[in-house]
Length: 436
Image 1 (cartoon, rainbow, N blue to C red):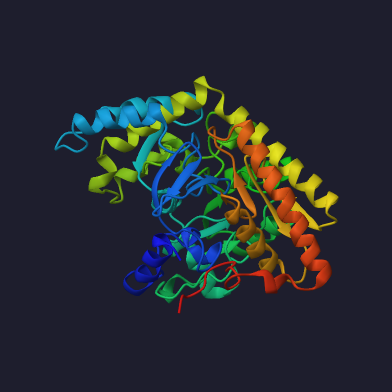
Image 2 (image 1 turned 60 degrees about the vertical axis):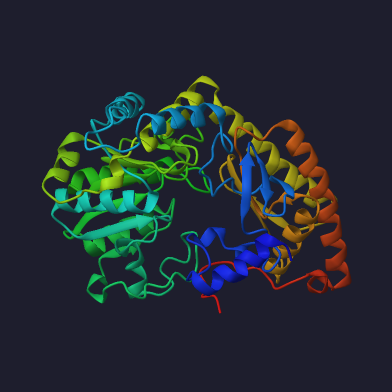
């Protein structure tokens, strides 16, 4: 037990849930042993509170640090913004500069609003869309955050959201009056989408979808959604919080000729500094003036400044190309290593956001053991890899050497029937679970 683990034991007693983000809970990786806190981070290197260095081959700040930790260009711009005043009675001019840039990258869009987190930006987008359509029912696919409009889907069916990233999300505290206002459909399931439309026709005001998540889109699926929403006057929102700026310089929807009514960005657009943007067509976005959407810290200078510096880097250094190449090599290597050790895994996800699953009766035990073995070798690693521009060939080479040894050990443990005996602590969690 080091200082990081000891601090987390204290945190669990005074912070409900231990952390502010479910995806950063140590229980999601290696309960009792994961270094919960960092002292500093640079590139893809992380030092814990005991000064031990790790190479981050996991999610790089849950996908927020697309360039790598503490990028010099972004930090320089942000430090300048702080020195000139990060908050003021007046507005930061960077808001206008960033809006012009986002509209240049997305010619279909005409107006921009800002927030600072993905979840709240989705809430804003849905509010505006409902106001525009005058109808309350929302159809969605994918994961879209923690707010009431989304979690209310689990009021009708407690497993409604299980297929959309995190199983077991509890809608406790969400007003039951919201029951029956949100309904999920599966990605690329055109028939399922059309059935929902027919069932709720006349009441649907909004359709929300990620342009891509784990699978390439079926173009008939994409075209059908756009055609139906156009025909019925439904506002179409694409959630680019995860995919945005990873496959291209802008939203992934541009790759599929999908012209939505609104698009939402966060995470990778500002390399770890809080920033989010909602862009859209003017006839939709103008409705934001007719409903109250306002918050003090949506006007700070740091967020837009960080986003401008990040997007400039993405464009000038072809960051998306690097992410695609790096992630693709990782996915291919997982398959090759698993085959060489006779391990049954399934690899999925878009290239910059790859992950694998152990296809056995006890996948969480194997996931926990893999994380434990890789941590012992100096890597923050689990069954997902979010590529960043800081990940270079040497990092992949060293990681794959360690993963080769870990896969070999796991294969041996399966043959012995003793996998769980090798764990130094409890099995990791797979979704939302209350901490005792």
